[in-house]
Length: 114
Length: 113
Image 1: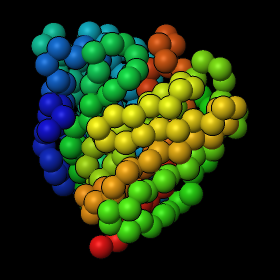
Image 2: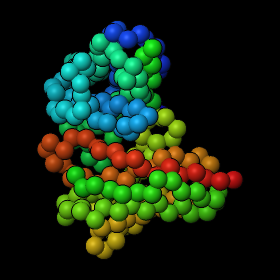
Image 3: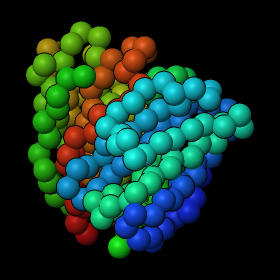
Image 4: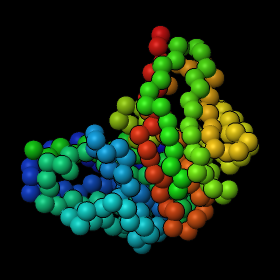
C-alpha cells in the first residue's frame, strides 16, 4: 500500500460526458501528479500541483483540468469524453515539489468511455 | 531528460538473478538513473536510483558503468512476483521544473517457474 488513494477504481461512462477522478496523497506529501496510461501511449505525465498551486503541465488536453484543494487532495476533471480517453489514470505524490528520490503512485482509476 | 533504451522483453528463471540493462548514452553529468516497475496495471513502484556509484537496497542493486552511458538493474533472486514492466528513467534531481518522470516503454520481465 503506497498510501496514495484514488477513487473510483473503475468508471464507465458515455462519450460526451464529464467525470471527476479523485486522489488523496500520502500524509505529509504536498505534491500531486497525474498520469495517463493508455494501451498505445504508455505512461504520460498530465499535470502537477504543489501545495494547491499548479506547478507543471505535461500533455494535458484542454478538455481536462485539475485542482488541488486546501486539504491537499486533488481532482482531475475530464469533460467532453471521447473513446480515446479510455485509459488508466494514475495519481502520484511526493513530499517535495520535484519528484526526486521516490514518488508514490496510487492504484489508478480505470476509465472506460463507451 | 536523457533518452533511455531498454529491451522490450526478457525472461528469467525463478530463483535466478535478473539483469535488466538500460542504455542512456546521452546522459548528462547531473542526471540520475531511476528504476521503477509496474506490476500488471498497478501503479508504478519505485525501486532504486543512483548517480554514478553502484547502489543496493532491499529490492535490487543498480550497477552504473564508469562512463555512465549504461546501467543494469539486478534482482538477485527473482520470484514470480517480480514479473512486471521495468522502467529505466534518467532525470535531473532537484531541477526546478523537472517535476515529473518520463516513462519510456520499459522492459517486460517474465519470471518463469
